[in-house]
Image (cartoon, rainbow, N blue to C red; front, side):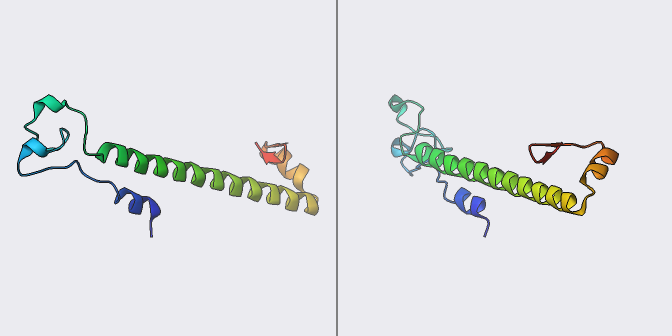
Length: 104
């Protein structure tokens, strides 16, 4: 299951009615009650904004997890090289260096 796709499926459309007097001003088929303005009044924008906010938080969490996994793997790699006694030689040959346990 792709959680982001599932969340996207929770988005809703603006309310539409056969009698467009009762449709949301943002409904694609239009609305007849022009006195209501042009902003959403059916709750779809508010609901969809919440769905978007949850998706954004989830994406940020995924990025954070991937960074932590990457950093952990690099530290483990550095530790393994150090245990083998080849860390300094490998870093010298590659032109990389360790800063705070991170390969740069």
